[in-house]
Image 1: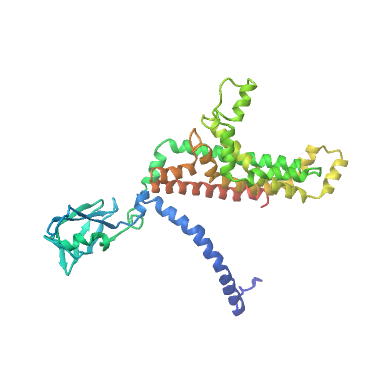
Image 2: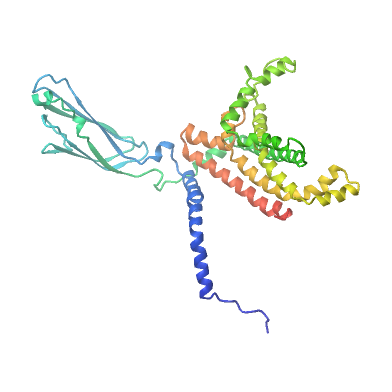
Length: 414
């Protein structure tokens, strides 16, 4: 006979508790879905649609009304003109209809065969308009003296036009062209290489400098609080301010860095730090390290100060050097927080856009995947290709996260 206990069934109390738990979690789940999941699904949807930025607007008919002619006396003739247009160059508009009220004193001489007039109410049916359709509907008219004396404006009664249009975003047309265009050229792999260089060295550099700063400020000394505040400045300062400062400081014509190098005879000509390959990429990576090392510094310092000081005293009595104490005692305690910081900083740096865009605009070999998203979606209005690059960014970060949690975090006991 088996000694295994039979599975326990959920009773009424457990079921009520489960319903209560789901009810309490529902606002959080809904918020996550609205803020994260729905935009992510929208990006995936757009990435397989052959659309541009202009196609996001639903196709609709437009009309502009104008009265043409020189009217001096009653009986003069002119033209009532309606400029008709389909706002979309990719989608058709069906069942287009026009309705307008003709002002008193304006007499229509001849109607278009698609239009009818009843008690100064003009209605026209145009049927279906193809993508990019445009037309000028001209109706000959005659005015009386009252119309001239009262200076009546034909646009005082706005012409109404209606039709049924389907958004290119919601139709059934799908394609993988956005992805094939990205991978066909060698430019993508160059951009990927730049992104990985910027992300890996920026992340490791920020953690390394943050660790050094934490080691410096882990001991009590006079002015420690002031120095901590100075170390936090790069992280809390507005990015546009510090980016402008760096660009000005390293300007090849008026920057202080070049002036100092020239006066010290280190260089013969000014250096364009943010305009030459590969120096520009190195500079934006250094900027990344300088700007975000304070975050690593804060977390590492907090973890170091929680380590029991008795271990260091015992190691010092055993003759261990400061480096041996750090490597044998501090590092094992810091591996957990360093792993978490590496994961977060890698993801954030890989997604970083504003720093590079403010410093170089993605020029001089500093174009990363996030800059490519902006250029594809907004600079050349190919929002489908921009969304495809965003999907690639998501896939890379997802693979990195899975690798991290499967191998690295397991080794560190996270």
